Figure 1: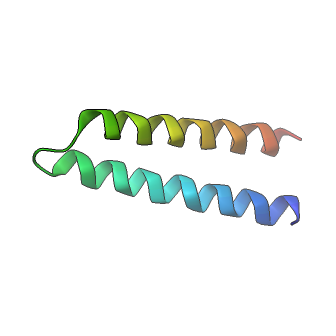
Figure 2: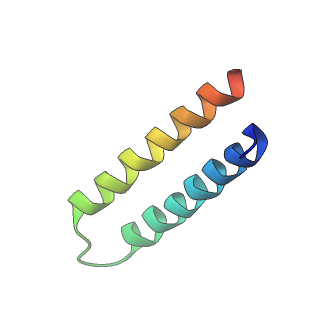
Length: 55
């Protein structure tokens, strides 16, 4: 997998998580720990994207 396609995949996964977090925060009775976990995953993806983009 080339660096460009890998970055595209990471960005796609980041956006999917962002959408899921947004939907979860709107839904009543959502588990706050699940939302926090999604946010952590999203942050890790963002850090990977930033690190790889700098190379």
